[in-house]
Image (cartoon, rainbow over all chains, first blue to last red; front, side, top):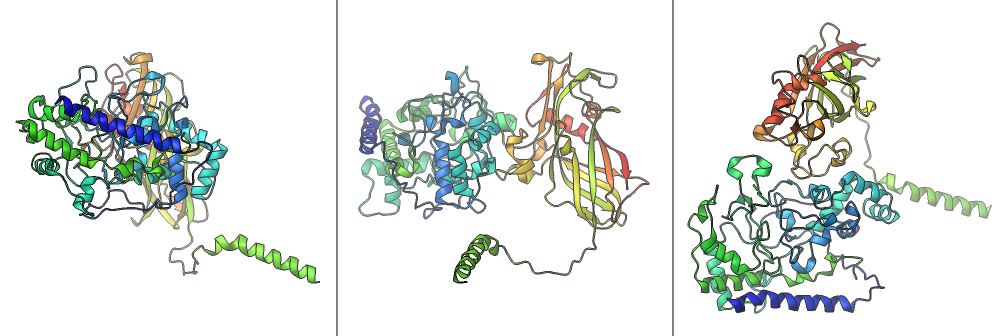
Length: 354
Length: 259
């Protein structure tokens, strides 16, 4: 167990080094030409139709580039200190490395763990409680949350309108210098919506690319996963995007009722949105409140930690039965869901990054 | 002569370039107009408290009940329709209006291209259609930056009343009624129909004005009598929002029709 615990750390260390190396190669004075010539909708073979299409928001390089600027600009926060990229970091699949709960301005703490961001156009709702019902209105939530960016979107629009840089970028993207929320949302959605993650080892194996194959442990883990996990973490997106109580005890400091906070339905108390497991080896800490540091802890929860407070998912009434070896095999499989191409795709990096 | 020719060529080329964008516009072919030439109707909302015009930060008293002051009063009027004597209906296209008491211009709705005729009633919805609550970012009156959209729980705030009352148990004796909810049991959109009575609105070459009272006091009277000591804060969909919604269904009444 001890050895296994070190594996994710090692992986992270290697990644961090690789990131550092990649960054060092770029002369900060040189603005690289953005590799944004592949801005187009992708529906990988065998995947369902996305929920969000770009019909009324046609994808353009300029729209994407504007969205990318906005994502990384702290101008979105009240005191201009925090950007979306602060809590959504590309090297951990746009989750927040090492942060159980997100940090807002003035050192304020949120109540939930910052999730990874990818394949967002398939999501029917956003946030752990599904409170946001449309990708275009998602930016409002962190911007206006008092413990996140604590800004009013009307002020953000005013700040952008008074910026010569953004008037130019909005003109480039939309044909005039007018800044309004719909344009902001369209550009944002273009950037966020292009965050496709479909090039993990798992995907290569499924597509029978070259000599790609699971090793014995990964294969066993995959078979176990299909038998015991896939009903909620449904492939190929590795979530069915439903709301479920997976038997976590209630954090007495947070007292988070989850989905019921939105619906007020007692049957939704303690239910949270099923997260995708793509890139899961990187997006620790885990669960909606970041209570688990490792994948081992997550699996131990399902085998022996499930508590039945209220509305426990019927499939977890008796937990999930897994041997120690099963757990190691499942973890080996879960690591095949890491998409390195996505993690290092420069078109998602901070355009003004060091 | 040659110089003039060159200058002329440059000018015409410039003109051509300048016009290029417009050339792309779809060519409109003149078609016979089926509707007879109409006119317009002004639908004016007068915000009141009882029989006095609403003035912010003025003390009022709910009939036989609590006293209160108002600091904000906004609501959405949508799906405006005019019903003719023969029951045919004029529906305003793209009918979404945010009425803000702080912005008097917003309380006047001009209905354009109304077919000629005599109209006996007006109907409208308080609240934004459900479909528009789930279909992403909208411009204009539906822009979320107007402060009438919940960022954490997507959906429009259909009516926003803020103020204070000495009996309120909230901090600063505040009154906060943000009424929303667009789906299932939480729906708070209400359709209101107002009969114009003996004076119909006659659309011909004139612009009739229909003046309607929106009585903020009615938010708290019937059918659900609200005591500010027990209910002073509504900021999400649900049972309490619906209490107010059932009341605002009775908030509007006719003041006058001027032809």
